Image (cartoon, rainbow, N blue to C red; front, top):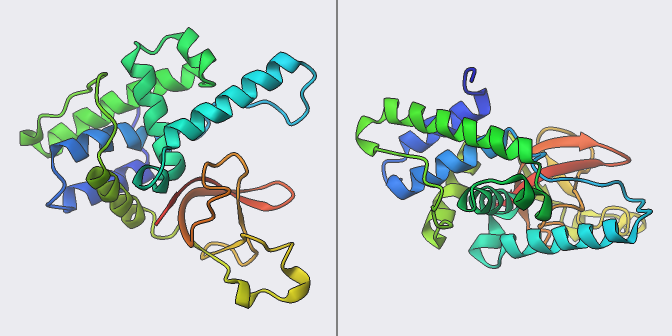
Length: 227
């Protein structure tokens, strides 16, 4: 494994600076950070399906992601919670190729996340010797308090990736349909939208933290959580 990427490094530094982040929080931190670099952990099909079985499988995967997202505090963590639950569930059963295929996960991506998670855990143990972290395949999902702490750290580490939903009062009448649930980012001047595959697509929170912007017909956010 090579050096830890810059985004992951910032994430670790911010975690260490929060004195109230306790061991369980760091456990989930070591699981979350590799996902920052592997947003393509899920299998994807094109919009045109020729096989009914593929359509049914795709709908099954969509439902699984919604279940992993949960509600309340869990849903507020958005796509990050989905990634946490996906990696946690895969590790719980031994990260088999069969499980990944059934749940719409890329097997190679899950293996890479495991390697990065191990590396990050070792790095954190070097920086904070008394924390005694280890990669726990049976780790339970984060509690509401841990979710809140994760959102705080993500917000701090990605302060330049924050966007606000454009208020309806700021949208002209002839653009209300075009700019419905549009966001304004500090990165780009043009309106940006949450990708339809995100579990926050229909939720449209007032503020979001996103991983990156990519362009199709529109500028779209990928991997979002509310803030």
